[in-house]
Image (cartoon, rainbow, N blue to C red; front, side, top):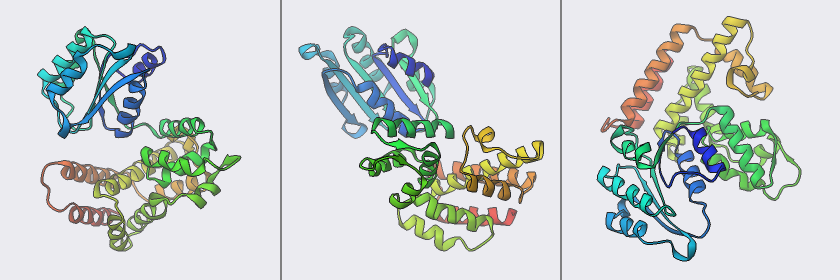
Length: 323
């Protein structure tokens, strides 16, 4: 099932009783878990994989609804549950239609061995949640701001996302800082109240890399302050991919409009900076950089792989050698 189909079913109050949520966006997995579980008078059992016991899960879904409410079972896991367990739990939901089973899978193995248990014949549904496109992410932030009574300017929503390196969970957590402010929240208010790890430091790291400057002190400070190697790697990958879109647009059309390229308008100063930076590199350089970064990300996410920080530094040096 596609995410849009799930949205429609939720709006119509017709969501399936057994749903597996999985994919690349952990934020959306959590978001839809909360949405699906927001039922009237829930009798909730929420467990993580280490706490999961089939006997307890089965007992929870086997009992009748108390006082007209619904028994809700949420299992969050980075490891797959046995297919036999899933099939049995889904069958229990079908026998007790008022009950609800949500399997929030945060792992990276998306093979059919688990999702097949949620096929149409079982009455369940599996929904793969991809990372939102930038314009979708911005709209999610605007919707969350509106739900909190915060009048957030669309440019400011983009600025806030960039300040958190596109991390939706971190971005939305920052919204609470504006809940007491009156009037429209713009870029000025965000710069004053938000400590933007990505804007202040990750962008500095990327600039140092692409200008062939010494990046090691910046990288070390970021890692010491809680950033992880994969986030830094993907931040550079996303930046270079965006630069390539600007580069291609300028080559084809003679100009680059961020609204047409990204689906939303960047603040003028950022748009101009992207345009100027994009034409510094040629097509072969973009191809080699993206290939190198993709291979490194796969290596980092694979089992073993040695020191991630050493691999990250070596990859950044290779990127600089391609410039």
